[in-house]
Image (cartoon, rainbow, N blue to C red):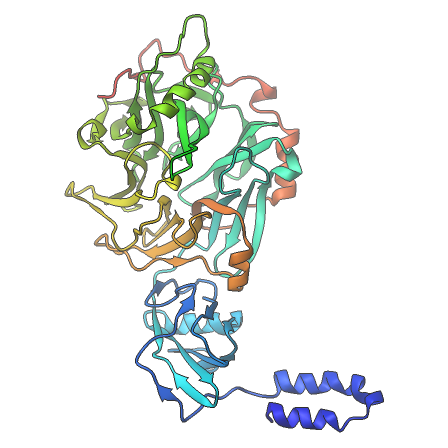
Length: 540
């Protein structure tokens, strides 16, 4: 059956009966006709242009369909999706149209049978009466599975005031998404940030709520509680956390960050950290232990090594001239903001490390991994690979917020050799920022603005044992139109081994009803008189 014949038959149906017959005709057209590729198509020596660019990739065997649209102009399109197949479905599927939406059941079977092999997208395009066959797009299916759940913060790309803020959970094996936190269900004056899990475990995870109903929502060994992480001497709470891999400890920085705006600079937005100290939170004792309490020195972004024996972090030093007499640290932090904005290009973060004695709960003296005073660069967001071999971090010219810096790059440090290099396989001329690993260490997820300079998006890459990465690819969507319609940024992607137990509604009720700490009381403060934790007041 072809389209001309079907139209001719419908013309013979009396007008009074057409409405009853038409659904049957449409059913036959859609379900009874199988597209077939033309046998006389001219071979082209080039690949079609598609969006997103899902070509020459290495993908997991449990990723959602790589749906795309064909950008090469033509009147009609056919796409053959094929691969090595061991399932009961056909080894290939022919799909019509400019937008290629691959059936999920077929795709799942195709990937399962093609693990360790390849899949192919072969596009046929008709212009006028002539069919042309494009060179096949080939992607490798890795045998390495990826942790199937992704969490990220969905937020406006960066303005004077925030509006809708959610923490989303997406199953990357399909397109199912749910909100873990939605400020619209809590308060329009609440905000959430800094979600993090221990080794991808959703039963040991947290995120912090700011302003209305503030507190840190902590799920520890499957039990949800709301904790108070405000350090009384500063008035600031948990920002960037890192779970110890084995102990009930969370290292975090207590920060006060602010957006500033340039009227004449090409880079309009800068985010400054006008206060930060480093803290340790004992989950079982509900106790805050200060690691650093420093003026003019800003410690941030703690990250444990995979064995918990080393704590990496970042630190900057800038002396400002505001009066501090009779003022709290919170007041002076706000007053120094204007001066820091004017001097923002002077702010450089060194990458540091300290050894940690788990029995004594004490740290060694800090040591510089990369000294910003020597290099003139800034280093942020260190993350150690699950095997302990590599550390990936972000390098930028200055400051702490790579999302607004086009020069920011992902860098790789080989902890065995001490050699570092830019991850040229990943980096572009757009900002590359936050990154994290799956639990196997074979996949890495990161944020970038390469596809659109206004909106941060999530990309994946396969990470080999030798430290090389494959061509990154965008988180798959149902259609490219869904991607274009999303006018929010997706920040801080992290992979989980399973779904978060609560949805947004239940979490909102927990945020509103629960007080932080024991009956809303302040957390216990660590008595440091015996010197268990060595507080530091200098960079080195």
